[in-house]
Length: 351
Ligand SMILES: Nc1ncnc2c1ncn2[C@@H]1O[C@H](COP(=O)(O)OP(=O)(O)OP(=O)(O)O)[C@@H](O)[C@H]1O
Image 1 (spheres, protein in one colour):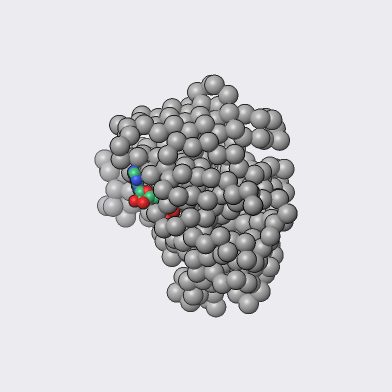
Image 2 (cartoon, protein in one colour; image 1 turned 90 degrees about the vertical axis):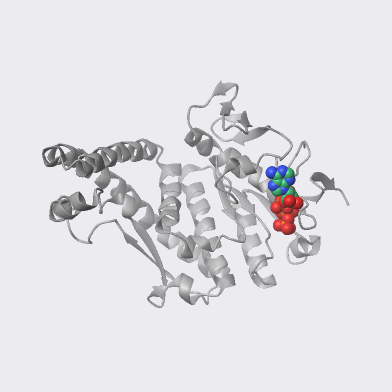
């Protein structure tokens, strides 16, 4: 993939430092892990760009140690044409969600602040990661809801009023299910987030407010019936969990408008570490953390606090930086390996 030469990577089960010059391939290594786990890259929406220019296929094979499954092998083959094959222990996986289940990954990278400033969709995906990894049936519930939403929107477009009554019942049931799961998750998540943010930077204070996607304190059925005429004119459903939002505020203002870039990175890091920590408490399993360009936007104190929290989680971490010193100056974890990348070639540093 990208500029990486075929590589065999034997990472440490805990901390892995990867350093190298600009353009050497550090991010590409993390990107490979992210693509395997989620089927998505955090750098591009088009996976064809991830494949090396001079190659029409990309193959990855991961050996994963899981408390429930023991050691298992995950394989992925992607062709430039778009075809994709995922296997677990030799059996074909029918959905990317299965891979995501076995390979829970959180990413902290230079654009990570977009979780605060980007579209509500990103924050919905954030909540749903947490719900999905604890409650696997959530994916099925979500699929059911999408089906009902599609049917409802089709009826709205065709102005088939009589069909709306038929689709509304299923739509409302699925919507309320999703909303309940999200609310229950956030109730458990908020104290953990507060604790982690306080450890990262006690001077930052932010609040998380969930909006379900329809008027607060109103029944979805009533909102839908009130909005039916307008929905019909628009040809889509204005209210529902597909419009939910997690509002992250600082002094009653959007945190993205008030906090500095470094503070935003700290808040997003706290969100992601809290999510991994809660996942660990509730499932007994661990998240893999990909931290690209640790030093970007973070001073020494915040780098140390972030690394220490990751170390305390005892999960597997991959951290990149241009300078080795930016990785090891503030923190010498007990269990770690250091790797150097040059022109797409990865080598372990032994001294
Ligand atoms: N599809 C591709 N095929 C081949 N090379 C590519 C492809 N896409 C990007 N590259 C090259 O791969 C190299 C590795 O990029 P990468 O972002 O992984 O480097 P990096 O070490 O993280 O750099 P930085 O420190 O600047 O973030 C770059 O030189 C880039 O030009």
